[in-house]
Structure formats: structure tokens, C-alpha cells
Image 1 (cartoon, rainbow, N blue to C red):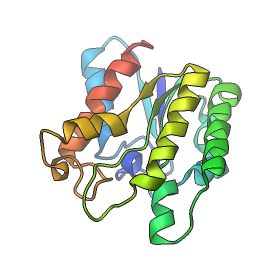
Image 2: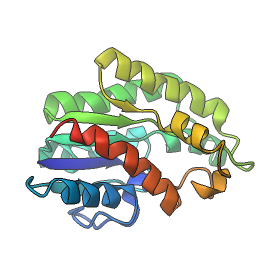
Image 3: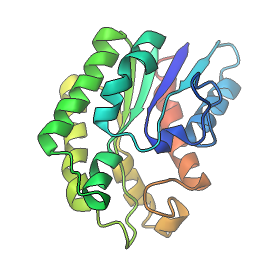
Length: 201
């Protein structure tokens, strides 16, 4: 079973290029290790094609070589936080309409061109004082949820789950800058992703 992880720095996390077979040191590696340990009878093939800094438009520009041509059975997609971030650090926003259009086009490539299954992970923010991104993030999270519901796709509500978890621990425990997970944050994500993947096994 070929599982491909597609996204930005949260997915990338030091993975090898160009093959993506060294999975990096983030949640992707934890997911792969867990699945191989729990299902030794399955011949897994994992590929990480995350690229730090990517927005939805960047995924679209590279979607054929980095996803479609690799013909995965299942794609785990987490993208969107840089569509938010660039508004604040570069004054280069992605409009709500463009974000939704890009996101749907990515899913079309996964479902129609690659004919792969997909699990969606919504973009998230662990609320810390120096990242006032919530006004731009909230509608984009809502868009992902609407698209997932319309297409009847599995969605892990990471933003909601992290906000709930941060009520019991300081946000810095999960992500020091609110976005890039700590080892504990990566473990938190992996523990949500593995059961979703297992539904396809």
C-alpha cells in the first residue's frame, strides 16, 4: 500500500529529496513507524512530498510530478497555514475564494487524476501571543470542513483538537511558534492520523 503525504513544512520536516523516502522527523515518520509496527503483514510504501513554505497554489504547480505521477493508493493532505501566514508576514494574502478553488483543484487531482483515496487534515493554529492569525485562518478552516463534508471525505479537525488539548497544557507544549509542532505536537497529530489510515487497510 503506497501512502503519500502532501503538504508544507509540517509534513516536510527534513524529508529527503527528490524521492521522499526518508520521511523526516515529524508526524509522517511517526505515522509510518506506527503502521509498520501495528501491521507487519502489510507491505507499506511511504512517500513524503511536503515542501516548507508551500501554499495551495504551490501544491497545484507541482501536483503532477509530486503526487499524480507517483500513483499512491492513499494521500494524506495537510495544507493551508501558509495561505494564512503570507498575509501577515509578506502582505501577500490568499483570498477565501482562491483558497477554496485551489483546494478543490488539489482534490480533483488526487481523486480524478491519481484515482487515490484521501484523508484531509485541516490547517491549525495553537494560539500564542505573537501569531494573531485567527481572523484569516478561521474562514479557511471552515472552507476545508465544507469541502470535506460536500465530498464526504474523512477530515481530521486538527485546529479544533489542538485548541481543546491546549486547555489542559500550555500551547507551547504542542507548538512553540503556534504552527510548527514540537515532538509532542507531532505525536499528537500522528495519534489522530493512524486510526484514520487504518480504516483503509
